[in-house]
Length: 114
Length: 116
Image 1 (cartoon, rainbow over the protein chains, first blue to last red):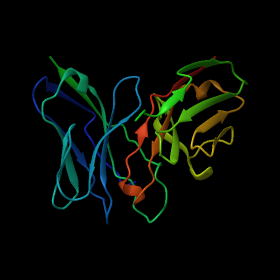
Image 2: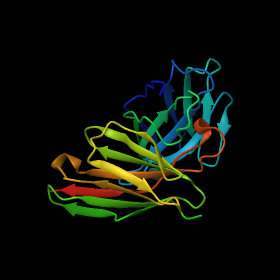
Image 3: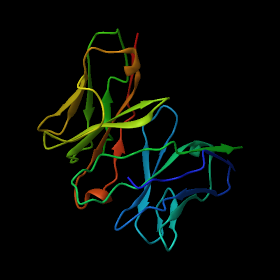
């Protein structure tokens, strides 16, 4: 997978927007940027993914820079339940057939404070 | 739709024993992947199955094996358990439609295996 770099930890006040950055300077071709999160003792949860354009769903927004070398996940109104480890992943687009192999880094531990 | 279901939720085994973990994917999902999560190594890919065939395998010893049934349900087996096999084992499913790299994974909440 294209290597991604994330800050190890971030804090956010409840009700504020949480902006989680990710660098993926080696991204290439039609590789997508995916975000997952893992709340303690649960399995990772898919949040959002995108290719070039900004994406928004009921959980979050994803902003991808024009050169696609970095992106930001935005949780518009963070709650205490958003405290989790957030993973930015760029699965390889090598013409293969594998759907299920992802490389997880250490992610960003987001702590939302009251 | 029901999510990915993994059973059992917790398991305690003794060194040298073997263990079988079960995963039921989301209805209609044909790809099932397994991951091991430990505090030291993080989340690591074990293997992936599609249409009852192993399609991809991570860097784990042969003691770790799996299979997928015709209804897409999957099991993984670990033989001759070692203390280091204590981990959270996660299963994920994917619809496997369209392009592979544009298909999110949906994870279960895992089986917590403790080897004593």
